[in-house]
Image (cartoon, helix red, strand yellow):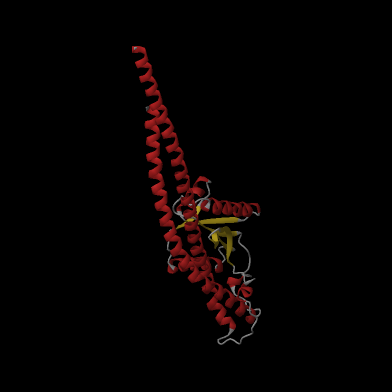
Length: 289
């Protein structure tokens, strides 16, 4: 009797968990759809402004801009912004990003360079606290980062870089490739790299610029940094929600399978109990004859 009661309790608990994971899967699906629309809306602008910056930089010739590098003496310090989630239950999302970030930090340590770690997401804060790595800044951008907040962060990075406080700025985030593929990546935010930007557009047309290419470049380079960081944030949120959706679907399916197993065990235990009781009744009746 105790075994049947225990199996019944487990069946109730598994059904409750299945309802919770199913609900979380539906919420993640809705958030993923909305985040994917935002990411798709910003991607064409991001790619186009990168290509435009590459075209103007090529037309400007040897015009120097501090955001393109060649700023002067290196100071041996770099910033790494690690973008993680605020919540768990999203599969390998945080683990993949944090392993990639740690590999980059160890690489810089091997090169005798100082890596200043900043985070966007509570899971990264907890991880670096466990690793005993100091987090210089903690940014709370939420599930729907506003462009104004991201632009303010990019402005601070550009100011520190131009002032010579750091040599480079990197972003560790999960790049969204497709619903079945998300790639942990280290993106170099500063100094800007223009290799491959022209290939995105696939054009080699030569233009005359008014005002001059140098003036346009000074205006476009900060915009390129801001939209690149904003696109990385949007990609990270899309990746987080799609991986949470997949994880919750797997949990729901596992709960369903476990529920069927428990139901089968419950029926077997109940049948065994009935058989035992019938055997006792028949044995008792036979003893009275």
